[in-house]
Image 1 (spheres, helix red, strand yellow):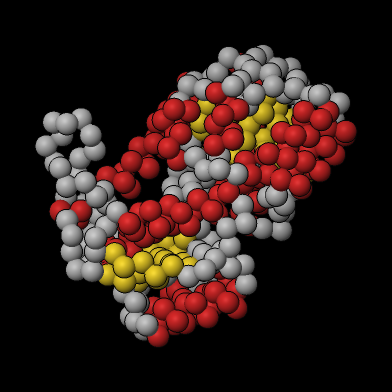
Image 2: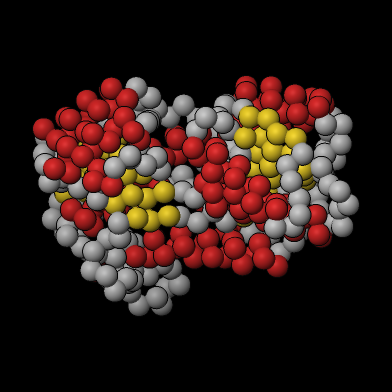
Length: 349
């Protein structure tokens, strides 16, 4: 894969802001009680980390059928394990909305203290989530939004539009840095019918417009290795010369990369999305330009916020005494300059 001199000016600032945002969430709800900072490690900022009343948190999410969702589940469990005062009731992952509704009904009947829910279908789970809220059980909605504001106490989201903006801004930097004249820019999206894909593509187009560029070739895969390879092969066949490619998802990126290798094509800068360990390996090896983070720690953050809400605590770094209604995580760019900083957040495809 062609490697270019890395544009750092705006990207570095964006990445730093993203890391700061992630650290803010961690710091606000951190679990380390040491506060003197003399050992050089993480330091807590409040007594939020001290063991409080034990709370029972029910967690339900989709089946871990690809790496990012697997990381969602594993990081949620790992975060709960950090606290002596969390009793996590983890339902089996499912892509069946009816089964997930039944799981939430069980949590309601069990009178858990809070529910963290990454719905397989936000609209389909709205009614049962609202029922839980009406029963006095706070619901933390993760990643895929409900269709009613009354269905969740707090919503925590990745920034799909922001991913597109970050990727497009980085592409603009590459165009300028490498003095590309009339560059061919391509996009490999995920499932086109999903709002998250539409948001990512819109953000990408908007950012490119700012530097007078457009997407010249576009295909849509299905977030799977197989579909990524198939659609990338179609893209390469349609476009004999490409300068920059943004692939929305690093899980499907495994197939995309295979298609590149099968076609013996590497004339372009390859930008990914989500932040898998594969992508970070490729960046380190000079086989990929960058990837844009879509945090797989959203459910873990949801567990932390659910604990605070159930214990009637706020986020200590805010003046507001309650947990915010909505948290949107940043979508920073990871490239060769900062990949080490984000390595701990990567997931296996």
